[in-house]
Amino acid sequence: MNPTPGHPEIRVDVGAIRANARLLRAHAGVPLIAVVKADGYGHGMVESAHAALAGGADWLAVATPEEALALREAGLPGRILCWLTTPDTDYKACLRASLDVTAYSVAELDEIAEAAATLTGAGAGDGRARVQLKVDTGLSRGGAPRSEWAELFERARRGEREGSWRITGVWSHLACSDDPEHPANDAQEASFREAITAARAAGLTPEICHLANSAAAILRPSARFDAVRCGIALYGLDPAPGNTPDLGLRPAMTVRAPLVMVKDAAPGAGVSYGHLWRARRETTLGLVPLGYGDGIPRHASSADPATAAEVLVAGRRRPIRGRVCMDQFVVDLDGDRPPVGADAVLFGPGDDGEPTAQDWAEACGTINYEIVTRIGGRMSRTHHDGGDVGGPGPDGSTP
Ligand SMILES: *Cc1c(COP(=O)(O)O)cnc(C)c1O
Image (cartoon, rainbow, N blue to C red; front, side, top):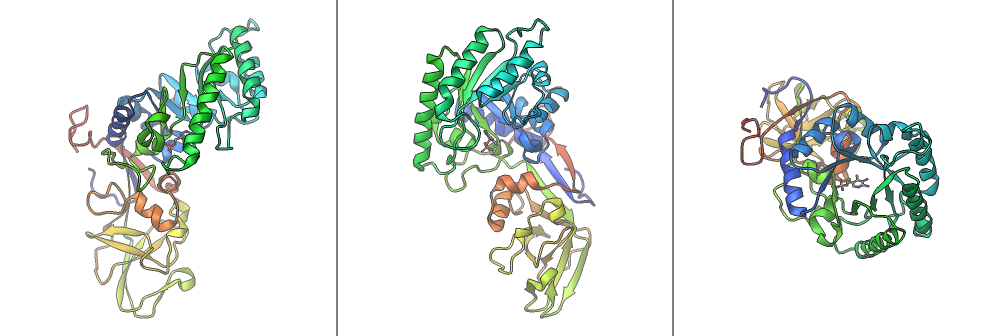
């Protein structure tokens, strides 16, 4: 570990991501598609992608074509899936970069066919383009609605015959996988099986059919099909708090900042905007130079001590007091006087008693995904390799 930084910092342990990928792949028993969208859920897209591949991930996936192109430009090899195109998507660039693009509709396939036709300049494509088809099985977000499956599969098969592309996958996404008992899981899985049957009946032979995200990959063997798409669990966070068995996943992100001021507060002193909180007795306050401009949720503010988010300072958890501001927030040091520069750990793996991203999510009324993905702003972010859990890293480094 580096010495305590003097600047607010996000530290990402790529060794944890690598080890998590290895655990997930072994647990699921099928190829792992590592989801590194949204800057790797705040952990760094490129670094997370390298770590996931080093841990045995078989594919990479991101939401947008721009993210996928950035991965390719950064030198990431192998298969990269993306699924959220927009009316201005440059399919030619996607196909040139050997991405697996996803289509939801016949109109999109028509556009991809046009782009594919220019690949060889011969006006007919050369079948190198790779396209996956997304079907809506009940999330009612992206994906072809059931009423359009037949038409989509037929157009896809025609494109194969004409040499425009290969259909490399058929896939869908679950609405309620974090709630394993929810009836939508069975219904979506059954619907997905029907989609696969219909695709095969249309003459398609997809390389991979996939449905499961992290929660389903861990909790629902019947939803694993040919591959699982894991995001949040790759970063060591629990996709279904309260339902997930302990696989030994390790949170990869630690967020810390130095205290920049320590001062006394008299009884009755109102703290931060709106005086949401007042000191009821004499105490000491610490100033943390982070705020919602850095992705700290303003919802971490609470008048109720029982529900305020906490940070670890000088070996104890200290609750946030008063409103989180744009650039700073205040914690209650309860009479202690750590020096200016003392480390305030907002969240991390929890090894030293610091809160976790899950604790912050609960305090803020959100999910751990949002906590890690939104954090950033003016903070610096560094990557280090803490080694595999319980052992040295591949380069012999130790935690
Ligand atoms: C983000 C996303 C995933 C990853 O979900 P996790 O719950 O983070 O594992 C998988 N598939 C799709 C379509 C997604 O948008």
